[in-house]
Image (cartoon, rainbow, N blue to C red; front, side, top):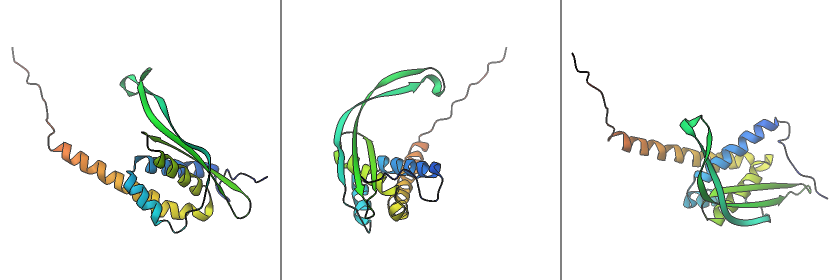
Amino acid sequence: MSRQIFEMSNADPAALVAVRQRCAAAVAKAGMDELEEAWAALPERPAYVWLRRPETGLAMVRGRIGGTGAPFNLGEMTMTRAAVQIALPDGATVAGFGHVAGRNGRHAELAAALDAMVQHPAWRDAVERQVVTPLAERHRARKAAQAAAVASSKVEFFTMVRGD
């Protein structure tokens, strides 16, 4: 029976969690064209087997009054999830999980495959350098462009006080 790799070799497990979170965030926010392009650009794309084929369902979205107050159910959103497993030459396996908003099964599949890859030292740097960093930078650029477009229509309100 093959062993599971749950932590980075010679590293802090919290660092692996941080890497996986950055990867998941960048992949979830990426458009499919960007993601497919980044996937194709990887020098090595390992074969994987399905642990869970893409499934679409609903997830409850919760909010907080005023951002910090009492939680409330805002509503439901469509989500797709998938899980894959990559077998390594030494017999170990790495499982990857992908959860994305919407109904795109391929998006969840790539998210799961990249999650599995980023857990293994042989692929981690390539995924960080060629997928996560460029996708995160593109997302930041889109947000900055959107903020600049909205800033031009910003209105400053002020109140004039009547004297008695």
